[in-house]
Length: 111
Image (tube, rainbow, N blue to C red; front, top):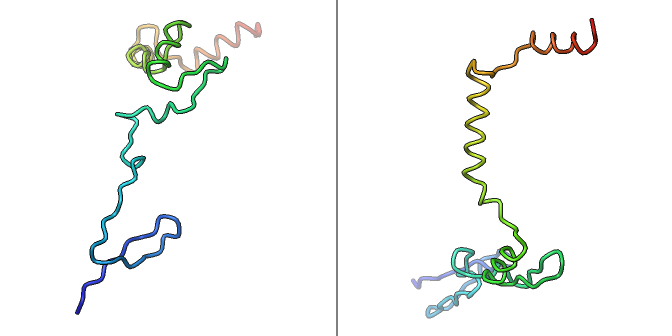
């Protein structure tokens, strides 16, 4: 009995029998990753039309226009969240109760 080998067609998702010496070609794009390639920058342009189709062009554009990316604020936002949580849970100017809201509304409406 001979052993048969099948692969799945990417387009039709059907199994296709392949010959014994078949070696699958690896698509170069399949190995490209955002971690080590600039593929995600291909053809990229800024809103003003400036070409930023590589990491170096993107960094230079950001530096020249005094822009930044969201990841620059990671620590800032984490610290702000911690302060908000402390404010809500501790008694130091923190938790707002229903009574506080009722008093504020009463003062506002002169009830």
